[in-house]
Each structure stands twice: as C-alpha cells, then as structure tokens.
Length: 363
Ligand SMILES: NC(=O)c1ccc[n+]([C@@H]2O[C@H](COP(=O)([O-])OP(=O)(O)OC[C@H]3O[C@@H](n4cnc5c(N)ncnc54)[C@H](O)[C@@H]3O)[C@@H](O)[C@H]2O)c1
Image 1 (cartoon, helix red, strand yellow):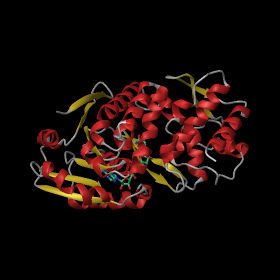
Image 2: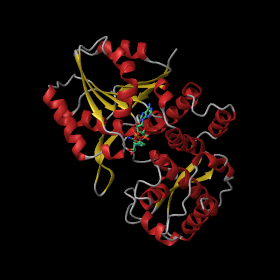
Image 3: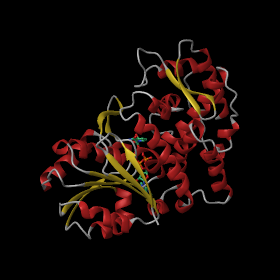
C-alpha cells in the first residue's frame, strides 16, 4: 500500500507525493491521464543501468514512445552543456505542450531535468521519481530547479512545480553507503529545526541495523517530506520561513568551497555546518546539547584538518554566500531545539568561535 501527501503551491496548483516500496502500479495508473503517447525520460546513468526494467515496465503500459536521455553521474552534469544537449534532445525528438518529462535520479537529475521541463515551450509537465535519500527528503520537493554556472552553484534556474512525485524506496536498494549519509544530514536538519523525535528515530534505525534499508526508512522519509512541504507551501518563493531550511548551510557552503567541491560532500558539510550553528546558537544564549548531532558523528568519517583557512578567513568567505545581503551574514540559529530564527550578524566574534570549535571537533 502506498501513502501520499498533497502539496498546495497556489490556489490553482496542487500535486501529490506518493510513498512506498515499488510504486509501479501507482505510476501506471497515474500516467493514464496524459493524452500524449510519447514521454521523455531524463535518467541518472547509474539508475538507467540498474533500474531500467523497473521504470520502463510501468511507463510502457501507456506510452508507446519513450525517449530516454542519460544524465551523466555527478554534480558536473548540472551545467549549461548538458542542459543544452538535453534541450536539443527533447526539441529534436518533437515535443508538445502536453508531452511529460520524467526525471528519474538524484538531486542532480531532478534539478537539471526540472529546468529543462520549466524552459522547453515555457513549461511541459514534469514528474519527479527521486532515487536517492537526499532527493526524496529534499530536492524533489519545493520546485527549485536549475544548473550551476562557473561562478557558483545553482545560479541559473527557476521555480517550477512538478505534477507529481513518486518516492519509490525500491530504488534505494542500490544506494551506496556514502549517499545514505549524504541524505541523512537533511533528515537530521529537520530534527533540529522542527521535530526532535526524528533524531531518536534515526538512532533506532541504526540500533536495529536498518540504516541502509529503504523500507525501514519509509516513515522517516514521509515525515521529512511533510516538514519540507509544510515549510515551502507557506513560502513558495523563498521570501521568509523557507530560510529555516538553510540551518547549517551558510557554514556548509564555506566548507564545500574549502574542499573545492570535491573533498567534502554536501551532506558532510551540512553536518559540520549544523554543529557550528549549534555552537553559535549557544553563544547567543541557547543551551542545546551538541550530543543531539554528535551521536551520529561516527557515520560521517569526516576530517576537516585539510582546511587551512583561519576562522577569521572562513567568516570572510561566509560573506560571499549567495544568500547574503549587503555583505551581512544571515545565520539560521536555534533558540532551542525546533525553534529556528534568522539572525543578521553584525559582530562576528561568536561566528569565529563556532568555526574554531567545529574545526577542533573534526581534527
Ligand atoms: N532543488 C532543491 O531544492 C535541492 C535541494 C537540495 C539539493 N539539491 C541538489 O541536489 C544535488 C544533490 O543530489 P544527490 O545527493 O541526490 O546527488 P546525485 O543526483 O549526484 O546522486 C548521488 C549519486 O547517487 C547515484 N544514484 C542515484 N540514484 C541511485 C540509486 N538508486 N542507487 C545507486 N546510486 C544512485 C548517482 O549516480 C550519483 O552518483 C545537488 O546538485 C544539489 O544542489 C537541490
């Protein structure tokens, strides 16, 4: 049995997130609504190789023509060249306003395909089939699409909502351990900013040796998705409350940059970033136990000892974050667990201290 959550993004726009193990039957019944006999698929290269029969079986029941574009693995696929190749592919094959595009893969595939769907003919129907934990709990929800530019990540893009999202945990059976950990950071983030019981639930998964078991993850994936839905539905264009989802991220972006976007995964950087954000919160009067996060440290195998910049230099880099306004650092901090707020930093001493402590923890 599958479960679903409705996402209302405007008075006219509503779509469903479906959750379950093997959603072939749900997908098959959903696609009957499309008038087109043709569909485009943009699929992560690994997923194409290992899960092709799984998604094709469902899609072939309705679409007589499936045109598959293979998305190269890794962040480098989110660039203008691959975007152009995908546009050429879709336009050369012949696309109409009603021809759907299915994005099957992780956040890279979802962001890139979403931007293709948003821009071809000013928008064709988009269906997300996320295949990583991170994509299920985060990137497939909320309508952010886009690609990177040589000057920075996610600088070209648009808000474009899908018609539906199918969170089929069968895909997770092939997910590498490091990708579980990568997605975990966003789940822990929901625990810190919204629902602390999530931290206990992750701990239970670990204790029961189910950390890489997709079926066991289902309730947590659904809970995490519901939190993201609640936050983004209230703030579709990221003007207010959605900023809370950046908890730990202003620190994380600097860590990713220090590692030239290769050394540390986004998830590792967010994990360390959240620890820094808890330190900063405590400096401003909160008393949050770091053990909430540190109990998961062994999963990360993270060392930051290659970071040679000083805390003062790291603070300077924070001022270049794309979410910064007028060079003023804006941090998402916690008054207490599950009580986030945005703080405009004027005096940076406590931020330097947060860096200092965090670098020490990951020596
Ligand atoms: N749009 C948003 O709101 C949003 C939010 C967070 C992150 N993102 C973006 O998401 C991207 C990161 O997403 P990601 O972590 O899913 O990375 P990813 O898409 O690169 O996938 C990670 C790796 O997992 C592999 N993979 C995918 N599915 C698999 C499966 N079922 N089994 C085995 N391997 C599989 C991929 O080939 C890749 O090597 C970043 O580009 C980030 O900017 C977007």
